Length: 198
Image 1 (cartoon, rainbow, N blue to C red):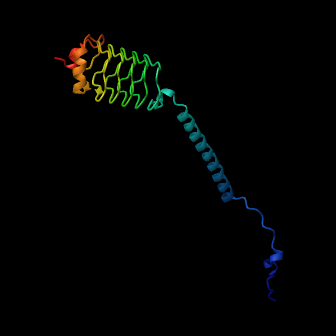
Image 2 (cartoon, one colour; image 1 turned 90 degrees about the vertical axis):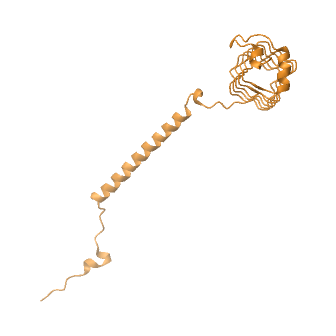
Image 3 (cartoon, rainbow, N blue to C red; image 1 turned 180 degrees about the horizontal axis):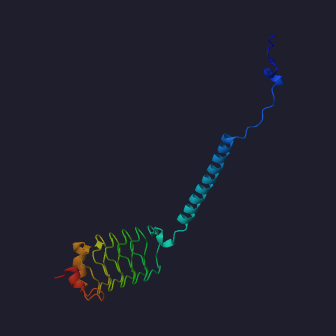
């Protein structure tokens, strides 16, 4: 007699409990997660190290952004200071001491420099446009290639100053030539020759 196969094994209540399968697939998955965690950690460390190196750049490598625009520098002492390329736009500089200072390529536009001490200062290539230099001392200053347009030189001492290739208003040039004398000790150029005085 043919026996009917028992269906008891197909009933939900009679199924054996599923055993967790720890095969190649599960181990591969766990291994991938482990490697991803390690790679992520390495990436974080590399980025953190790069960030620390960027912050640890020496001060000399940082751009110099100091300027003195609109500053009140009256009676300040900047003698022999390195101020090349600095900005002094519309700064108040009455009685300022800039003796021997390097002001090459500096911008002194619209500045007020009454009675300033500019003895032996280097103003090569400086923009000294619309500046009041009344009563200032520019003895032996170097102003080669400087732009001195609309600048007042009333009562300015220019003995030994070198104005070679400087841009100066014609009226001021005539006034400067009336009192130009001396030889610049650094360039060896006479003040009169540098101004093109006749």
